Length: 457
Length: 67
Image 1 (tube, each protein chain N blue to C red):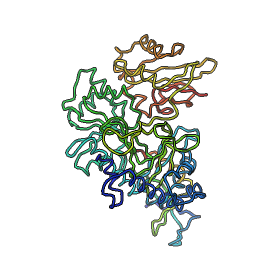
Image 2: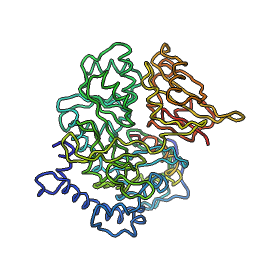
Image 3: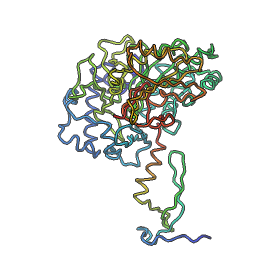
Image 4: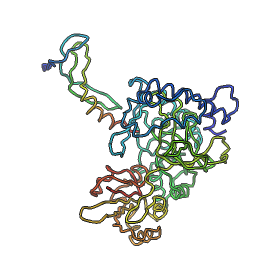
């Protein structure tokens, strides 16, 4: 039994001696009915949203006919409309800046009990990739109380492992030195930062003093070439993780079979739905990942749209669990854009550029300039200027099928920009809309994605 | 000793005396802020105007509420 399966099993009524999917689904239906009733009675938003819903549901399939909750619902109605407890019971709030037209942030509130649920999950999930007495180095930002690092650290404490905070990697040499000093067994980081570190170590012909045993990557899409490079340089297995703040940071973890991710089924019920109808798509088909919290006290969410696309992987996972597997979710929007007659896809750009020696990350910025045609600026971050080769980049662009794309190439190496890489500022996607005038210094503020094009249309 | 400025239009509903302006310390997410606000000289209860609570204070809170 895997830890995730065990975690789901311990929530089942005691008469279920063995874990079965049937027992899990029955538990989920019971918790969904509890949540629907709880939210309809206590939350201003759901009182209205669920006014015509007949509770209890008699099957999980009935859930798909209930209206979904969107990120826009959160920003427009505010956290207070979603709260099911008095505000003073909210122990931690996370505010997420959104890129939507209203510019209003999303705020998610957690009670102490909700935070305990997250720690409980981290305890079990971390034990899937590391074990007691091990050192876990967290290379992600956020060290405040009950923030991501703090909760990870509390989860690690529970099985006698120890988490250490490093934060965002802003200097590869310093990060490598720290790793040599600490000798962590496990690193938790952001894909493009650990990818940059891998390329740096390779360039310097340097190996960490003590090899890392596992790497857990989170908070962004894990591109296949990025994974391969990290696995090769660090010579250890890489595990992908998926989660959003609305989900309580964690939702799915790649298993030892490395063929997909398993979901946090004891805490949430997941559906993969048709974005137009909101109804579930058949197993194996792509759709939007939607979740309903099963045990959230402060701010339960019902059929919350993640904006991410995935599919259930048919058949049983090679890791042996009965829990279904999903493909690593990707943003639905921001995967392609049509510019100058070319449909540019993020996948093709990544394949064309991420394997280039010394290249750390890249960014396309589409700017409509007054009195001029569109201008496509292509910014490339390198380890060192000796890698910068404009002709080669243009050839790669052509080889990727973008023959007619007129771009202006600019290079940055670590001494120009430090390693404030676009991929470290947010999720990889093609971002449309945003600033009109191009100014490099303002990019980090108005944009938060890499490998993207930006238009003001 | 500096004389505390009385707040003419606000009265403490518990102590029935006029509030006075004083420096108040707020603590949130390990940060502390100071602000001059009306408070009751007897029980210490402070009055936070709605525009401050929903304006500047909320903005600062949200800035601190990172992951």
